[in-house]
Image 1: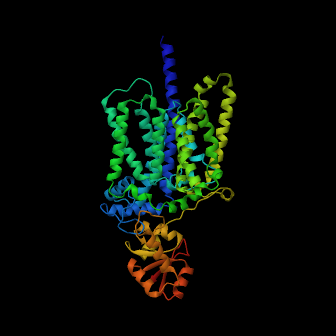
Image 2: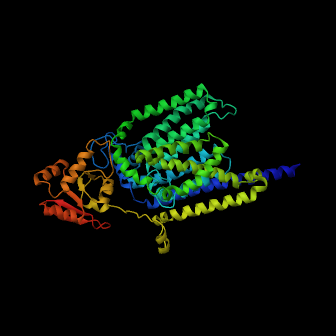
Image 3: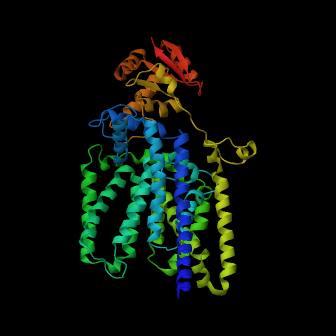
Length: 526
């Protein structure tokens, strides 16, 4: 009698180990990726902005200035995420870059655990979360798009410590928690404590809404998809709990002291112009994700007309289509959520087909179906890996033959040379690409922001004033008045701009040039 029990115990141990291996791999890979990004901390895109946010908020918790131009105006860059970072900087003495390093690791593990948490609600296969994460970072398109809120491997290498990535991780946990709370038709859960989770859902939703508004739209659509999926099982008590969650979200968002959500609705044309690229070369940017995700979603749709991942894809597709039809291209920020629905579904479906349970369900067709599925998945992942291989250039020196065939994004380095001449708190007249995006990280303001700020009352005036100060035909008295308005003593210009101003009578002393970007010259007004 003991031998069968021993054999059964051994089989159970083997089953536990086989289930633990892919989970351990998931967290090891996520942690390793987070540590690699923290080690290099690539400075590309909006990194200077996020450094500036931490620098300013850590020194001015009560009334921080705009992180780019220094105006005392509400700014949506001051979020719960950045507040925690600022408090950490104040409390520990860490520098802003070190805080971002820490959050690179935090966000990597948060996203991995969010995928794990969510998929556990819908799939018992141990390999499903890992396959889903691989799909998220590799199955996007055949060209690289680096953008906040986009989850390809190269994009995440640059944006892992951004608020958008944190918001993604929180969103995944939000969906998982809501999926657990909503009734599924089985035995009802007992215990009063679970009703306390509805206010918690409201707080989590408010955090996403304040941290990254584009992600928040996708988060809301995902919650709606879950509600539709479970609609026939909802009771009045569940509806009351959901109403409490919504009320908490609205109250927290309305009470947030640093900015109003309503301030983000102005000047949509600026956002549409920037986001037009998201609708260019759609197949190159998203083709691999669509090609692999849509068939899987179709399978799930045949199984259930209210599958939450199918509904999420459908809802976000409506937003993407609306942006295309109306030329409101900012709605292209819904593309990542559309792809995410298919990527999560792909992880679950392929894990199920390739599992032993899937083999039993397929019967005689198991061997060819599993072989085809494994081959198709391997080919897709290899294509995605080759597309994203340029991201390795942030960490290692790629061979020339590889660099020639993949898209490589360069690290901008730093702009610290400027601090030898310009003290913190100064406003500079900057008109070079890198200076506009990098000097705010050193608590140096620019006259005009590097990025559109429709919530900033003086944005259009600042743009016009910058153009006037740099124009050769601006009267000297008018230019001097504008210099005085912004307290301009320093200018960062390309040589051609400096020559034009000197020809117009502006007396400039050449002070220094950027070691990395020699065309960026620092000039001082006499």
